[in-house]
Length: 169
Image (cartoon, rainbow, N blue to C red; front, top):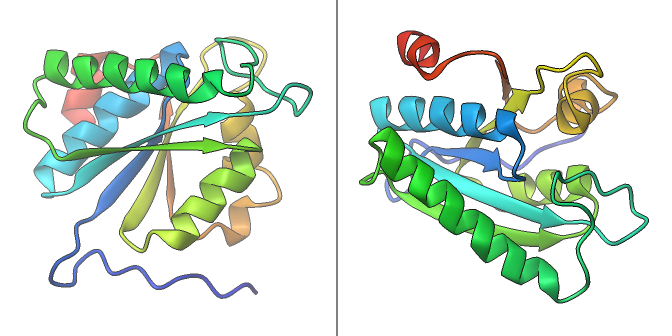
């Protein structure tokens, strides 16, 4: 059993963070709305993370593989898009931070969670098409890492409407 970084989300000076991976997929918006709703109700915050994978590293962002150096520009664009969504959803006042990483997605997510003791939950949206729930859900939520992941993973069905999520979260 791997020993994980102790979470400090309820200690003074700390805040419970809901980590959402922003990648431009439709299910990402579902995960964001769910996370925002729960974060607001629990006095938590949202951490938006965008990860650029190197060409040939199995990149599966709906925006395609990004050139070296262009990843940070794309990340800023993504963050702006998803901040606008938070405003649109009615969560303009919710504390939000952004993180940009380059590397293999599963590795970078795990590394970030181990480094940030305020991350309490990873929120992923499951794809609604017949090819499966999506690479992140498959690798982190149901793959070999699932049993030893450092925080709980919420998997939000991609077919849920905002009204349905509002009644659940």
